[in-house]
Length: 423
Image (cartoon, rainbow, N blue to C red):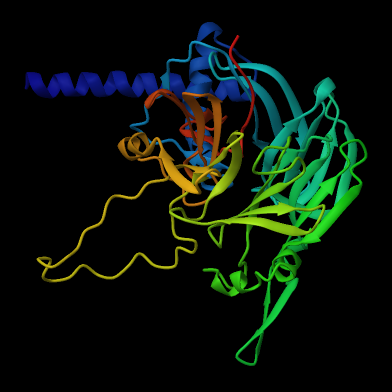
């Protein structure tokens, strides 16, 4: 009997509290009473279901410029020097931000906000900082822009569609990877009586002050005019056989290249081309123990270094079913991405940081970036996962993501550019 009375008492008290809560909600909704310090908590409680639904709907509709942060992700920050970078990310569907960010303390040093006139998933790629806080940028496969320190457009080049890297040469001009709009077919060859149309790429030089096109040439023409057209049919991809992702201009003359030479990275061919625009001559073909590479940089006067994705060019299958009898199964190593250094002196390749990449599972199927900060320290962008790494003497001293405005999600990285390392 006592237990029944206790349950009855609790029920009466609960009904009374619910009645009071309902009465307070009614008056808060009408706006005729505030109830002091209880106003905020009560409004939150009755608004929570709508807020929860709004959050769920928001997450479901997030563009692919946001990545879910893994629950087990643990950041590392042992930087003892400033590391200032230029990065770009999505603020809203119709806005993009470009930030000058110090990774050592997560401080924002400067910020530009620009309109996104394209799709909600359109990304600003590889922004370039100029004097007076002017910035050059492009949306992936769209126009190239220059803005001033107040985010006003100085010029806009709509004659090309830029993609991937943007780099300055020794004259201060811009080299951009470009192609025809919307992946329109711009190349043709005949094979076995069939006409095969494909996406060609172009190397384009722009005047940094005006955006005017100073030089523009088809990659297919370069290959054809240097008796290398067969690389188009050797490619692992038919529709997009070249996929130029970087143009790295030589800023000086050494024993192995001239100032003004270009190093072109072709992902689909797993090939780096040393090209001299002044004579339309291919000086050197670099191919070897790497695949689907990105981001060629000069390491010193005698060598280059690049990000080796170490991946399929075209991931069309997950492989065959496991065999019923595994006794004769030949097992290879666990492949990850890594860095490759190519030496011009003896045409040899050296892997850098391979053990660190394996230990930390650093791999990105597409894109990816490396920048040496000094002789023993380098920056890595694991682009597909949006993870940023700094590795020094084969030890991870920085690992993080660009946190977004959406809880549990971070920004996709978009070819971060190193501005300064050190005090």
